[in-house]
Image (tube, rainbow, N blue to C red; front, side, top):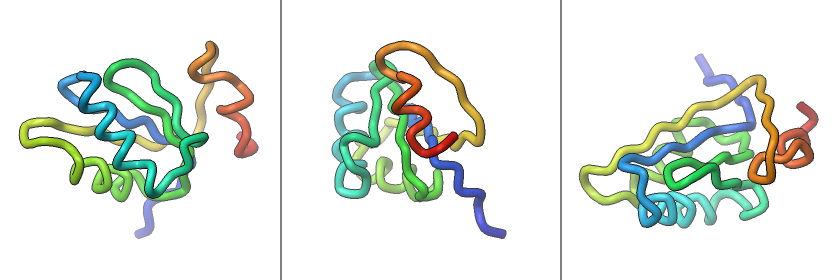
Amino acid sequence: MAEPQFPLKIVVVAPAQRALLDAARAALLPHVDADELRELGDGALLVHTDTSASDVRDWIVAALPDGASTFVAAFEQWSGRGPAVDSVWLGRRGH
């Protein structure tokens, strides 16, 4: 069965460190335009992509050092407020 394609993903890296988040971002950029990424803190990114959560995870895992972890979840519905997750950015895919 195909994985549902929900465009908003949250990417969490652990331990939450700037270097690991930067590595995750760098791993995503060959696949996702920089405008499709938003940072939520030292350990989390929001990503707009129709790519499956498992593919996003695989891109990131390849860039992380041994002992680091990542978690990627896709969302069908969401809501947010604030400069990092403004409503225009969240809703630009029609949700």
